Length: 407
Image 1 (tube, rainbow, N blue to C red):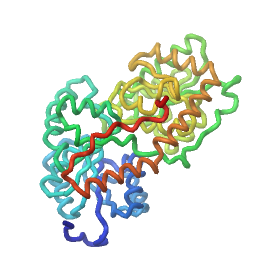
Image 2 (cartoon, one colour):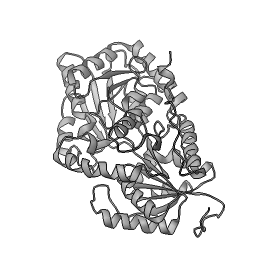
Image 3 (cartoon, rainbow, N blue to C red):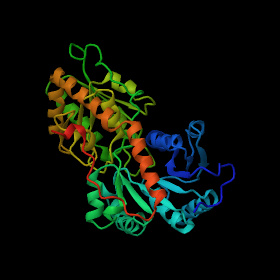
């Protein structure tokens, strides 16, 4: 039964509210989903900490609801109370929580305020489930308990980006399998990210460029990339490495600025910091490299690189395997193994035809499996399923196979 309308909201439109810690993350990672919901006729609101993208979010026709919180803050009672007030005021028909903290805090608020339908989106199990330091280990136990009690409730779905994460959560008993849905990624605009020719001279006398675009975090494997580039240099293989990304001081695994500056002073290594339009990076690079230690959902950086026609070298870990298919559009290497990484990079640097073949396959993969239109349709279908019957179990369907894996 529909509840009474919120002021300034058309009474005949179902209301979806996205809860995200940072406005930049919503803009970077969830915009295609929200656009699809808007275009499907939903009233869309975004609750987030506003720092840089508030005007852009409002220009999309979304209602912006600023929240005074930070990802790194630990004030659960105060922050849950703020979300609870928001939900009681807005009275959304469905809330879409983005990442671990909004999912846990938002699930409590949604339960207490009686939100009819809940999506808890976990884009990779991240720092707490992958890091080995004391802080991560201390957080793992209470977070696992919160998952078990809150995320798999009868009117909720846990939205994951790869089946490996589903298996972790179900084997450990944290979320029932029939409460999990998989939507691979958040969607890539294949008109904005188009195939790019290799830089002129890349196969000739010019020094070829390898690039990684990611937040500068320890578990993203950036140190191993720097080490691999130095190994190649000692072997006499000329190449340049671009590190594109900011340190992300809100994350406890951030690489400090002094280390990044020191890497940028090594021969052949350049640290660019944040790059607003990453297509500029892929116009210069002939290889996209991303070698995290684990904890990925489905790396957006690899989707964008593949859409631009770049061959990939990636870690053989959950999440990366969804877009980096070994021998099809990528070469996979063991995580945290700089010599193996150097070997894979050397193979691609020496073989222009292989780079072209893998790059073309990657573009095809993004067009057929990961486009914004396709991911948007799958997400809206999940919303409609939940809103039609919030208590019904999710179908335990066979995973949608990737085209590149079909024989």
